[in-house]
Length: 350
Ligand SMILES: NC(=O)C1=CN([C@@H]2O[C@H](COP(=O)(O)OP(=O)(O)OC[C@H]3O[C@@H](n4cnc5c(N)ncnc54)[C@H](OP(=O)(O)O)[C@@H]3O)[C@@H](O)[C@H]2O)C=CC1
Ligand SMILES: CCCCCCCCCCCCCCCC(=O)[C@@H](N)CO
Image (cartoon, rainbow, N blue to C red; front, side, top):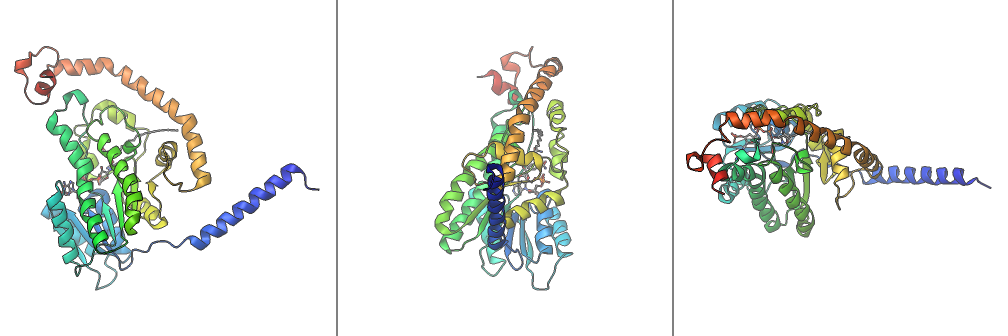
């Protein structure tokens, strides 16, 4: 007779082996070679690194951004890693802030590649302008949604429609942030947009099953990009301090993590341990990436996140005095309603 612990270990061992064998059989990874990849924000940062990586893997790459010079420089960098003479590598200048120009950009890229709908759409365009909520005005909060949400949602609209029309089972890949799972001081104009992207991705993962289109969403932490340098110009000191816990990564590394997740068919894609902890701790009905590891990550979150959040709250509370001084210096407390304009005017007219 087997003892009970031995029987249980044998059973667990057998199940694990079965699972490994099963994953080996079903583990057919997506190969970007010869595929048309549409990369928004492909002229800088994460998008540029991803465009280079895809070109290295033999994909046709169409990049979209606004600034022509940066697009040209990016295209040259992408050309350098071309694998075959017939790879189609192109750049398109469009603003992706509204529906019609996003659709026009998408159509231009289809035409530029023999009328072929992209096999994969990578939505890397975006920007963040951190600041205190009471300093925001109508325009800055709406810009936050444009730069964080609409800039990806409008392209998705164009892509999904085209894929449904062509009965084409493509891929749509959103770029959120760990700030699409949680948030803290300074991100009122950005984090809501990144949470909204998750809502859209969750809806479309389900709805686009109707057309065989697969949906993915990436949740990275800090990436050292030109955009990161730019956002730090308006980032409150306290926000930067809280972020110090995250060691950050280079855009090449983030792009590699993103592509690996898409290749594996993951829905929520994490870039590192922090991302995995937040992903697993706020999973909802999202599919697991690895049912064992995700359990471990949630356990780490179950213990660790409460301590982390308390630490963050303490930092914010300790920052109160300095913040009051900052507000005084900005004339926040002594100006009369009529003297305000812009953001503070908006605040006082409430
Ligand atoms: N850097 C970070 O720490 C993190 C970034 N992210 C997200 O990753 C994505 C990429 O960020 P990152 O690489 O840092 O950004 P960068 O600013 O370095 O690059 C942004 C790219 O998007 C393009 N772009 C921006 N806005 C528009 C627009 N309205 N229309 C068309 N193109 C646009 C830019 O070109 P141009 O300005 O010429 O149009 C550029 O090519 C963003 O969604 C960001 O929120 C997520 C987590 C962390
Ligand atoms: C056991 C649990 C430990 C938890 C530690 C958590 C540390 C969190 C660090 C937050 C990093 C924020 C990155 C923002 C990225 C981004 O999207 C912006 N750069 C764009 O503006």
